[in-house]
Length: 227
Length: 271
Image 1: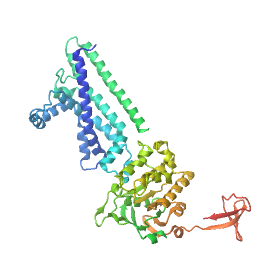
Image 2: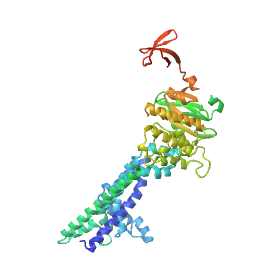
Image 3: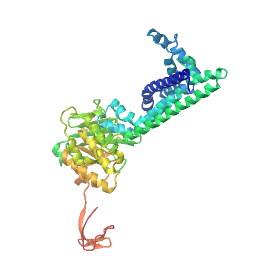
Image 4: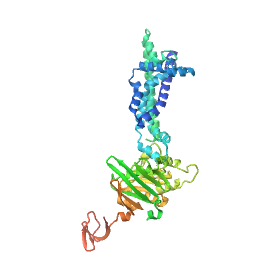
């Protein structure tokens, strides 16, 4: 049904989107916490900067990543010394997709943290729980549905990310050619419409699978939480 | 008077400006009894509790439980709420919705001093028995009635081995039947554990029932302290019901709307 190259694009897409969602969430939880709970000068600007990928054209995100993580960039040079290269690699594709979709995850996590009743945290505090203790036993478990939703939205969006990925990681089959890039390549070739249509259907199925998975996770979580 | 016998073991003084409202209170309470903070809504009773619990920072404050000084703004002492060992029960139970009753109770229990094999003053079985919540352990907070929720909240606070228990109108959100039920458990708690408590209420009945000492707070200030009996004298007379809402007391006949005792019955009227 799918050619080996198409399977490869699907596998790569899932891997890239999975990494993007995972690491995106790892960054989104503490940053959303700061934005939701801390009051400090420059908070609005900080929040705006975190949301920048949402309003920047994806190609600009890719370009900025090249400036920072490229072999001549400040971080890229340092990474090169320890033997890590990001541009034109799968890891780089995941980075580009993760940065592009980060604001979506941040927003979901932030709303879910803000939705936890501070009185419950106060109660935990009077029962002897310190800040980290409260975060892991009260706030994050109660915010779990929002965290799951954030991860899934991030995954689905990363699965479709095109501009930032092709700019930063290029379109290398088997390395950085995810489904949207493969669809684009197919459309560039004469008579590639059938392949493009097939890959589009695969993209749709993958995104749908993610949504169904999240629905299942939410139900499981709700049952576990006794709601 | 327990306050005089036990000495002043709870010391509270707080001064705080909150917009137009100024809180300026100072009072003492006994070490093994219930100090009632009594006054109308908005008088500053809950604000005082927040200062005691360390959840609000006053401009100037002293809070001490026995020898332990928890807040002393002049000496720059401020123990964070999680290390004060002060249990709090509010009007709403604030149970953790994602945890069973047992897990709610264990939350404070496992974090209490003495959790690592040391001696706990208040035993698990004992607290559960006094509050009669043993049959609720495997339930979830959403499946409890209002009165059961409050009992679990009291148990949770109690099992965290507090040095002081704060009760902020713990029965005000309940209907009359549940209120009597929970008040009975609070009274039992007082007899059984001899724990110092600050009890906030605007109900004279609750103050008389539970209080060893009463601090009357109005408009952010303490306007009187003493025993509940002296501070809230209850006037009771015995008379004979005449029917139709009239009662003969001595030589006089008074109108008492609401008396529906049959004519000739002996009734006690308080006001």
